[in-house]
Image (cartoon, rainbow, N blue to C red):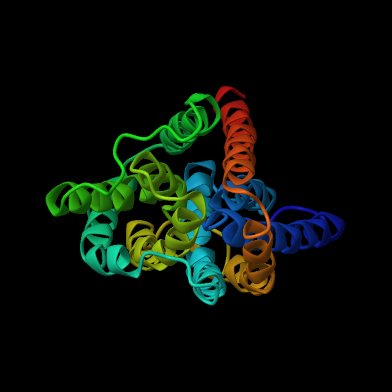
Length: 274
């Protein structure tokens, strides 16, 4: 293990802060917080002397583990305010995990730069929609028919597994494109998190099983020590984010979400071209 005692202490404090930030984001935007967690976890694992070939995969896999309790806490907070499309989540309970499972068999053969590139492209597309399309613009007033919606659920699960997120970014785009209010989309996205993260965690554990050069207390590409440190802080902050979301207008929530995605895309791009 590499890194001085001071570096390790600073890393632990940074991870705790990342947990708080990801929890607020989970409640505010319905995302799992992976956009914050993945780059910080990547830096932390590098400090620990992790084999560079496993850094991105460990960051994504561990992020998915943290997303499970965080998004559950966030969804509860939104449901207490009467928000969230429970019928859509029920319909996706098989299709989203199916997309995750398929992606999990592929992700072990994909480089870290590819994972980051997928993240950047999707984030930029979503941000562009939120910032530049006319206010109130949408493809239709209602969600599409069952076959199309089921396919979207599979796609959300598939892409989210590569990005290390809970699917909220993608679902917010989908629901708002089909005339659903931003607050409703955010609440539904929070409930989507466990459907992506639970099978995703299992997949990353399997894909990295027996890997050399990973930190102690890792099961495959999921590090239990980082998960145990970050998750409690994220769960604590999630209801705070939910409260903030319901204090913002729909348009302000969209703009804030888009700017957040742009900042993350820029940060990820720096890692790719470093």
